[in-house]
Image 1 (cartoon, rainbow, N blue to C red):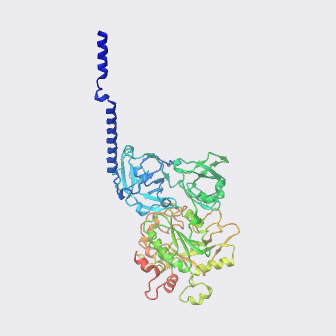
Image 2: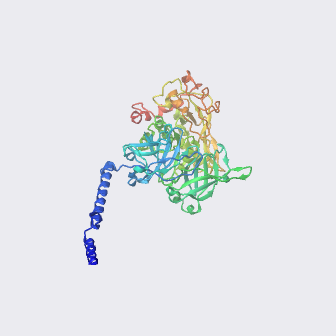
Image 3: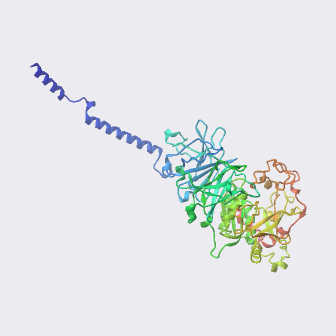
Amino acid sequence: MDSSDQRRKRKRVLRQPYPPFYCPSYMLSVRFLAVCLGFLTFLYILISIVPFNSSAFRPVLVVSSLSLLSSSSSRTVKSVQNFDSFLFPWKIEDRVLFPDHVLLFVSGGKKGGLMKKIDVEGLECVYREIGSDFVVKRVISVDGFDGLRSIVRCPLPSMNYSALVTLRVSGKNGILKEENNGFLVNNQTMNSWEKVAYSATLDGDTVVLFVKGLNLRGNKDSDPSLFSCHFGLGKWERNETFTLTTKALSAAQEVVRCPLPRSLRNDPIKANGIRVTIGVTPRIRGRAYKRLIVPSIAKITDFGSEGKKRKEGKYKLCACTMVWNQASSIREWIMYHSWLGVERWFIYDNNSDDGIDEVIQELDRDNYNVTRHVWPWIKTQEAGFSMCALRAKDECDWVSFMDVDEYFYFPYSTPKRHRFENLGYAGQHSLRMLVANVSSTSPTIAEIRTSCHSFGPSGLSTAPSQGVTVGYTCRLQSPERHKSIIRSDALDATLLNVVHHFRLKKGFRYLNLPLSTVIVNHYKYQVWEVFRAKFYRRVATYVADWQESQKEGSRDRAPGLGTEAIEPPDWPQKFCEVWDTGLRDFVLSNLADLSTGLLPWESRYALSG
């Protein structure tokens, strides 16, 4: 009995319902509700962060995970990546630290990775305080660069802030947060402008690489066996390594030439966009040491498809220059020399911020056939001219290398010039006809050298309204140095040049033109408000800046000036030994409008500025 009662009790206990928290169906319903609640919470947060309207989908730059080759000047710090990057994948590939700004190289997005004005509205530079939070500053400027990337210039960081700047669009998600609030943190590297492979281009089946930090002599070539080129293939942002190597063929100044790897030689166009750098093998007393790899931001570009080529062949005469803030001067220089016969213009813009890009676009729209090429590298005029020579080779027979304050002048082009028209001295396109005559009569001549007369302020205290050719009329007695027009296919493979003349291939020679035939008026010492800009920085690599106390007595400096931009009390009367109105008379006789008296650069183009 007792046993049967116990069995009945156990059955009753087993039949009793489970407590609510043990019920499987109840467990399932709680889980379902939790999932639903979590999903709704996620939607609410997503909508509050990314409102679904057009303004939400503005491009935001993303920091690449690339860690560049290390160097003694490299530093590493955290940077940020925004959630919106999944929609607009801009990437900061590289950074270069300059004395007065930080340069960012940006790729990705649409149309070859070039940033447009619509993309960068409200773009800000973001800096991280060491061990603390972020601050922002306005971007200085944005430019296209090499067809593959854009460049963004940011101010230098404040003290105690890292130079490893990143970017954001103003107002996006408020102040940038750390990784636990949705930002991906990566390690990055900063390159120094003084030690970096900074540009590269194809030339036939070779690559020409431009490198800072090799410290080669300025007036002679170097032993190419000390150098090698290293090519990276595949996805650079996935920790790409340099997988192919070739030995250098030549090395001079900042230019190293190497053959393409065999896998690219049959189809060089495939090299476009590949990262390349230089290896240096130090050699001391005949002993070779471990090869050093120079940090690189250089990607190979190809000029073959970008030129403004004519169906009837090359341009007979082109011009190349490098400028910084010459928007007020470049119209006169281009319009005048176009009248003399220059057909094509290459303007290398060295960090101008005076609106020169708009002036150049306007001139090009008016059929002056001029293009602007961004050249952000300081102290690299010789390298820039080497690059321009390569760019012009497929488009031009002859190229003049000169500055925007230098003007070719034919001394016989006076008001009585009609006596000399049949000699070809005074007419329109006379400079082009000169080089054409040299080409046809002396095929071994590959450089035409012209002496220069240096003009002073000519008694003026303000810039002349009609331009330098009319306003400055007093000069030094003796000519100084020379400028050159070169045959682009006759340059030595090293591309070695001393700013305004190049080393030629064997078998070619230069011609010195007599002063009575043609001369260059160099408006070197203008009114002080113009001249003092020279104290900011000299563009040539092997010329000391005027703030430095080096070679103070050399011809590269203004006589009597020290290292500070202080105007001498007699500046308007300086450098005046001979009054020379020849070019002024020529310009007023030939280029002034007959009805208004205005010169071409005084017309609506200049007045609108």
